[in-house]
Length: 341
Image (cartoon, rainbow, N blue to C red; front, side, top):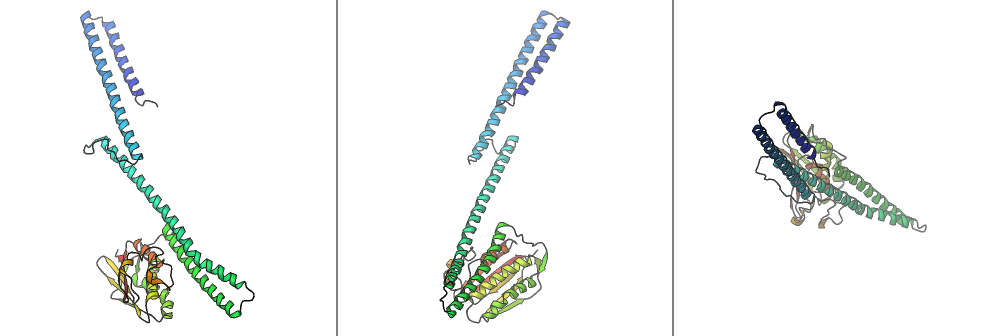
């Protein structure tokens, strides 16, 4: 490895040699007395020794400093946060050490984020494969049964109807999985910079949920005391609200109603979606927003556990949040909070 100080040292010695040569030339030219010459030679020799000592000491100090910096970087590579220089001192070396440590922490954070994203992608692929397995297996089974030429017409018609149901389920599942994967990967960006009327966004979600509500004879009621305009993405916010309304319709018993209330506060707009459903056990309250989570009381109810996960992700992407209150056999209230800005 090349010595970075060799050039500096040789330049210093060259300068010293030039000074000595000039001094000797002056002595030869002026021819001073002998004791003056001796005194000058001694003085020059002492100064030369001091100069050489200073250069060598400076070289040693700089090599030690670079060695310490090299050790610091190597420790950071090995995952150790060693501080070679006093952090209390306001020196260039302390600042350099702080910057190197900051760079290491930044790279470590990026590496950790990459690992998490990689793990999320693997988990998402695994979850999607698992969710597609059942409807595809059912379609394969019905297809095999329909291949039987001796199958009665009534049974064939029933199997065909079941196949249509599975195809609809598969289509719905694929549509939601595409939305999920696009949001997860950042392909879709929410456009929340412009202000929109919140009532219109909620009404679009109600309109989307109306056919399912009408089929179950459930009334959707909307109440608000004032017009609210705030920055949000109307399309995706409407999707989040619809997912919660759809969830309420699925678990509402009998011909109860789903009540939606919009209120304005100092910092947030609040949308309450209250249902008369089966309620959520306390033990499951922290899990209902997990991807593909299905509670113990969901058996027999259509769904795969994507809607609430998507709803929370869409709301949190806009600096909002969702809270839930619930009582078993009495229903639940999902509250969406969006910042007023």
